[in-house]
Image (cartoon, rainbow, N blue to C red):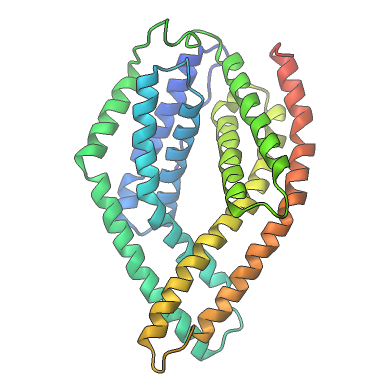
Length: 316
């Protein structure tokens, strides 16, 4: 379950922002029990999406919400994002990535991979234990109580929040346009020689734009939003897989070192795990090579829709 809300096209910016953030808070709370159970990875995924969407909206909340509210909420949501990261990374590695990489391994190699999975499952259980402790902490309870109280009865001052009473359609379009421009600028700077960190930052920019479009898209005609969202999802798939591969390679190398120490005789890397790592490295290179074309497609499709949107809202 993720937070989705249909906004009134005549809403003020304050009304729209708080409605969106309430929906994301509700999604977080709705997924808490599933996260605590640690059985269905979708619950943690949806919890994290609600956290990230909230952070993206808050990032574009200047002059709509009080700066002290923005700062505190972003700090607490950033903490939750970090707290959920390890468990989510291990969910993806154990449940999605490894099953897709073991085809064709012989029985001995599969046994080595199974040994690695047992280590990863213990790490996953420990990560969930730490996460559950965070969700049961006074810090989390205080944040949820404070955040809900503000979002259902926001107090803002006209001096600090001059955009709060402006039409949400106009304010949101300007913020989305700015994020869109930044994504295009940064993406065009990426070259085959760029460090992985450049693509990681671009991935975060792409997420911000997509989440803003999804959160505020009901303020506009769907045909202006859908093409950009579609290409953003595809771009995120490439950038997300690239980032996941890097994280997963490092973790599997660490697990391989543990297995090498445990097994007689000591070896540099168990053969089965070595084959999995080779396949993962090949996937990493494949998606890295696919970035340029995928970004070019993103650039071709969204720009006409953006111009129509800007003209429709009187922001030429």
